[in-house]
Length: 631
Ligand SMILES: O[C@H]1[C@H](O)[C@@H](O)[C@H](O)[C@@H](O)[C@H]1O
Image (cartoon, rainbow, N blue to C red; front, side):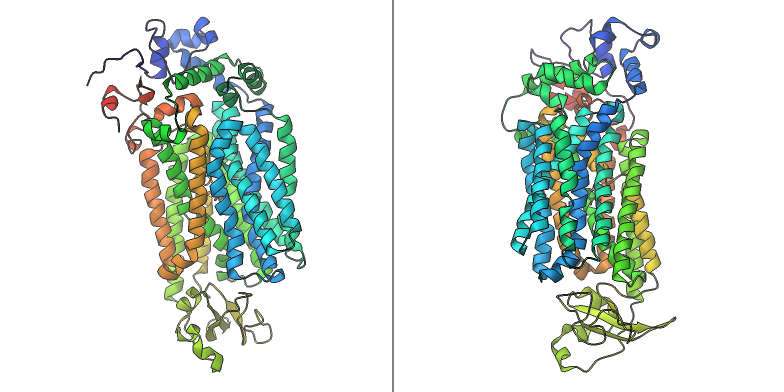
């Protein structure tokens, strides 16, 4: 179908073509890229031989060394990621001490953990408005201020109610930081380093989780008030970030959008060192002008939904965040201590240190992601990661399945009258006994077998022991009886352990960081704050959903059922990523909108092909047919 382009309608083709014909077709304008004055005026040898000015300028920029200032900016921003990881990670260790000292019921424990994540979901959504209105820098300052205040309140909290306030305040900071930091880093980075620098933010998240587990381990010996240090230590990086950002500049893209052109130029040249910034400056400027001209005002989220390319970007961004959480990372991390106990680590203190080893593995493999992201690109990295994640989840599930099939029987039935009312006595084998949150498995073992095993009620105030009997004082050296809560003794634990390690090795380089990295790049400037707010909100909402439902899911589906389900969800995630995620590596932020000009779920079909764009009424389309096909 042919389209007649009116005054407001203009064509947008592939970047190279548009720039090549720019002299000839005055009213054809590129949204994707504006040529720099310098590149048009003075062609280099490469342009002369290939006739391709884009190629030569892109090559030049690829050879450029990123100025140190950008690394400083990335470091101070990523402290927000560190706080994200620290505050979400530290709470499990703090809770072990808190529940004893403050006599917390299971409900209060759950409330203290999930209130932070819930508050983060709300503030991430609200962060879109703050970000667009006040700028990235002020939002980061606000988040670090909130983190400091929250940390202080937590460390001094006299009652559980004050603790809850502190946890909610920290959550509010988390939400804002989680959506602002990746956007800020993406906007200050040069295209060839952007993926790596934004991925460093996730490295800081997993680094924060690892440091939190070390702090948990260290202070777990301090029974009185140890939790105050654990929770309060987050004030240090928060204050460091606050002080740093008092001296650091606003994102040049936000400055330009708000009309602070002089300041934007100055900041951009500060960030690019000796590099010529004309091309980048013009490109951002042209983009903003076109966006303003095409904008019909109105609420941003509604504009995003109405405009096909941004709508698709939003679906991809939110979908990635959803599948990240649905692949069960936080369940695996949270459950790692139990998995390790299953493999025969009986000492609680030892389990805490081994959980630190799990967090370290997550951190280490995120580092692999930082190294790979600019080498293999976001798409391949995410695809490879999600396939591996799905397979490792299957290994985990098979490990749990074999353990369930070989579940040791109950051979010893204590004749205490208190037991008559308990559901625990009805179980004949360990598997259903451990799936019941009210019961645990008490047993003895020698080198070859398990014997004298019983299913007895757990002490709800301290799940590390039974409410009475041989196991009521934890692992009892005298009677030689062991207490297993939430797991069964098994000789297949090595498969589960293998699954855990494989899971982290595959998840951490791709599915961990890429949803954040990709979201920071795929929206045009006018939609960036809102797009990231929505996708970060989705991440937090699914985070709280998956962690709150895990134990119930495991109760209904058993552990192996739950992990098979997660691997099924990872498979769905693979299909989604394969169909919908385009490669954004090396593109300038202003170019990326055009990658969503095609219908969703066609990415897999067009991998690596060159594209032609036309732009009609504010939208980018891959071909003239797409215009007629507008969804
Ligand atoms: O990308 C991060 C990272 O993978 C963390 O380990 C996880 O706890 C977060 O939920 C996730 O968003």
